[in-house]
Length: 295
Image 1 (spheres, helix red, strand yellow):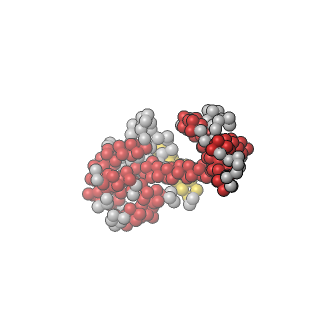
Image 2 (cartoon, rainbow, N blue to C red; image 1 turned 90 degrees about the vertical axis):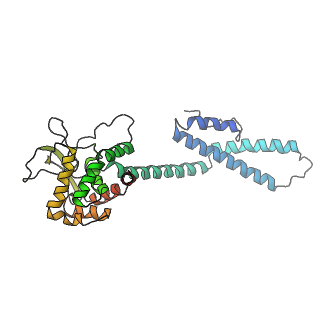
């Protein structure tokens, strides 16, 4: 899109000179930004020259409407020529607007991180499953809530914990259902909570690569995870784990405080990721699960 910038031979304030900016903005936003900043610089210089002209006496014998018209046209072209050489104003605008765009993108990424469920210490290393072309993160998260909300409600009755707290942990552990541990034959384990198969476990299990933290250092390792016949069984086993294991007693006493629930889970050793509580709190208090409360 080399024709985005207005021609130096055109009038600086000709409205038609803005047409290339409008048509090229979508195809080449960075070039359009610089061209728009340059055009603004032209307009600014022209206004500056006009102000200087207006401040000068204009009642001489050679002053007339015609001379003022031609003087204005000359000032427009002079402004165009000065801006083409560069006064620095356009560069300042580009830097400022670029920083603003980058900041907005960062804020967007931070907001999305509350939807995607960052990788946790129990999350398999396999890439997220393909959820279909055109499916947004928000749509996947909403589908996850719709699919498992009733199971979370059942687990809530067993534990006394709010259903969206339970569903939030399942979302974090499984990446909203995209990182579920698989059996060797590819069948789902239905283990949305990434509960490991310890020595006391008598059911099926599947091996998966997981990330464990030693302080702030992350290390990949292999572990066995429980496998269930259904998602209903997975939620039931999660509720039973919290009720039967004394180290989670403070978790059950967290009431409706999302941050306390998440912090007590981390203190009890459910996760080794030092950022686990913060990630879980962000998901529980995010718009997707808050919407689930009114569903």
